[in-house]
Image (cartoon, rainbow, N blue to C red; front, side, top):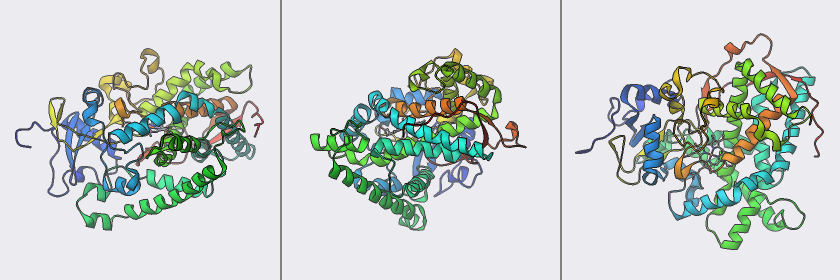
Length: 478
Ligand code: HEM
């Protein structure tokens, strides 16, 4: 650090560095990091065990990292757990080091897998699965029992994602796969012992995470291998029977056509990044709507007016629902599923807010703190107030860095269209077909909104509601 102007931070201890400020605390890491930033400033340097970690907690700091110095921060830190998870595949897309391999995968993702055209081609899948979701809720309502929205929504998103990726609902051991994904997503990146003390073999041996990751990795790969073999044997779905290609078909085709080395390593990323984040967003949105009945009623009125003549929701008209879009933005502002984004790493010497950022340091952007900063959002920053988006035209590309739930710059989330297609549709159909109430005896103010920490930050308690059918649920074609 000699001669360097390093970012400030709280007091540190030998060996563990600043870990005592984070570990063993009741708060989830992004909340604790905001408290520290309020005392030490919008750019801090923390030693998390052996790992120098720079934490950005203001829109200005985020802009300098993700725009001004985008290239210097374009890579990801590959901790020991990520190395175990990805092994020879080199980081899938989400953890690939910046370079040709990442560029190739990223292009495939944006042009082939997650383009607007591809997302539109999955419309029949979404409609089919949304039909199942509505029927399941109608059945719960018929029996006058509470609907477990957390489970129902997670099952919808997972099924829609599985079908987009493998082309079928028939996925051997799908519940087991879903649970394995949940376990893996429960690990906060960079916070496991082996990541905090990468030079220590003892850390690797005493942590239970390596065994959990290895077990889940080999089971998930075994299941995916069966699917890939089936696709190879029976050919692409698009081969003549008029069915759209699924994502495994596309990857296999590209690998054959261009001899790519990497493509087949992205499918687990797609399952994880695609399903956990979208279902987390939907559950937070429904929880906020239950806590704020006036917002729910206003949104319901907009949706019912738009679709009154059709007696069902159609995707083509979702673009007309301006209040729905405000509700989704407000949900992602207060509850970004990745509150600390996905970690970046500093590759070359550079300055942020006038401080020198050490080469090789892990960089966390506290998106959660930034999107609740009163300097940008005023004294209502902690409230759920979708109308605030009426006055400002913030989009998801993070132009002013006050609102970056999908990140920004080169590594911005490539799945925005896919995520929004699911979130918009599910919210619109639920609120069109049903009225929702909290179970008897529970008031909106009493709802437990505690967060559960993990790669994506979910609502800790399961969301239980009473559903009352208003418009008949359509028969699905399936
Ligand atoms: C509401 C839903 C979602 C949210 C809030 C979200 C958020 C994010 C964030 C914050 C990042 C890191 C950006 C950065 O480091 O600058 C990211 C990366 C990524 N997301 Fe998403 N995401 C969502 C849905 C999806 C979906 C549906 C997919 C794909 C099916 C997806 C695929 C990815 C991938 C592959 C990356 C890594 C990109 C790279 O490193 O180049 N995400 N996402």
